[in-house]
Image (cartoon, rainbow, N blue to C red):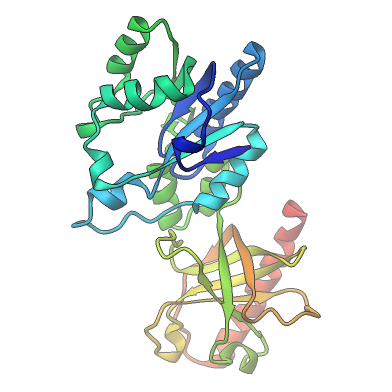
Length: 312
């Protein structure tokens, strides 16, 4: 897979099958589009291309609003895209200046001369260009005028719900990680750094590793206790994670701490790990004493251990 950051480094393609969009987290709907691009490109013997943006356009255009939390980092998305089999990824540096590019200019000055698409595939709700003018009708007219085949993919639905990044984001925010994982087509998680904590978990006989997401705009799940999987240094291990303020001890700072069900030989503090959220166990609760909390943690651990078989 070739990643392009500047068109100056690209020899214009003689033909391609192309899709474009932000691809905010690669979910099952996105996978269908990308897989279709790869399939049609291979059938025609021409390259498959994704044109996407970084940072997310909403981070540039909505600076006066709460920043949009991200489902995946760019690197995580690229890993999935490479697995699907795309050959070229053009990542456009999305700026305020670029946001003023009209849909016509974008197609005529970027897409057509450099990628020469024979076939364009987009989702049903995709828009591009200044003021989102480049919708399905606009793209249909452009492709007709330029003898380009166009396919607009209908939404992927389950239980009458359209799968979308917005829906998945809301599922995670509300703690429905198992459902979110189904709609993503992969396990929701993020890369994080292990940092020193207060040592309170060790005092409770449940030693924990505190983690901080590497991505500043990372979407975080609803507070509570989760069954998780950690991946690092070529290993993986199951554990349980508490994300919250530890109300039993009258604390107020949001902390994410993980108790792994494995004694690691390697010191993981300061290391980068990947945390994957498999299932939500319960809400965060204020217990009347440490003893009551410890008993609950034992029950939580037992429940997580019973779930291990589903994910091994």
